Length: 478
Image (cartoon, rainbow, N blue to C red; front, side, top):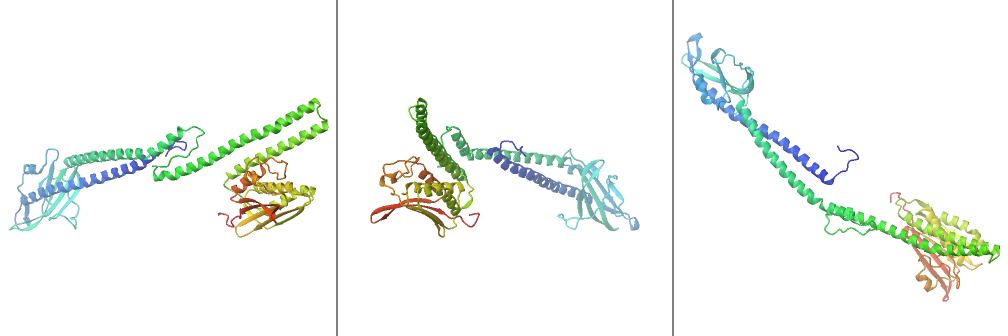
């Protein structure tokens, strides 16, 4: 287990994840092979023990008669040297007669107390087992040998024991040979894995080096040609994130540039007005009115620029609540009722419940800008209509005024920041950000905005500003 603050290496993880199971398998396989080899060695040497026991049995004969019948052996111990593989092992034996009496051999050899197995691979009544003789581990073979003669017949018991030095030496040699082969196999696998992992992680290192060599302002997409299939989702997600960051950075640059450019003029005018008032060039009352008007325009400009920046901030948010657009429209109309009354407009409003997925601030800013622009451009005493209707998937807000409409020249730059919003001839007012804010809000909500002249008998009778937004899905997870 690595500490929580340790840096994880992809190559190290792959190497450990691949080599550790391989090493465990090789270790398990080595143990299994060693046991199998040891069993095979026991089987081979057990055959030698059986041959020795049979040779002893061939040297047995019957002596005596009647109740004194017994087994005799004429074998000398020196004859067993032929069965000893080398001087690293020794053979001991014991021959017991019909009544388990000692016939020949080593009297202190532990007697046999087991049974012959029911299933045996040898064509003899023989049993093999491990025992200890004179403090040394031995392999014991017990053979039940029939002995017959003229005087009688019976079953003699022949025990042959061999020390384990030779078997252990052979087992160690098999183990060493197996370990060398398995170690060589592990080394080959490790080299192959290191090479493959090094080659497989080369694209990751190349991407890391490419990102590290970039300048802080370089948000161009990463190349995906020739990239492994497993890295394509990561590269695509990274490129999408860079695209969003690039858009956000460009918006911030444009905001700073426009702010410095647009605020410079009212501040310069304000400075001139203050200096003129200090010198007494104009009446104090007139100077205060001019300063107040300039401050009002600068305040309106700053608020709208902050609103435009906030639209971009809200665009980046993933979780968007649901609000009733109709309630927002009615609250905005109530806030602007003083302006409507000041111009004596014939105002009417009809709404239907319209749940849309949007921030309340965005809906309020959108509705306020459109309605305020319509109030400014509608002649006094004329009609102004607000209607919010819904269908199966869309909510549509239409604000209809009886103003002069939009000229072809103004339509080309209508949504550009700082293009004048006032449509009256020979007059300019407003900061030129209202419709730009409206378009940014509508686009962030996945809707559409249209400004169409309303004509009658070939003459413009007013303007219809229509905004369409998708209704919120009834399923919260949608």
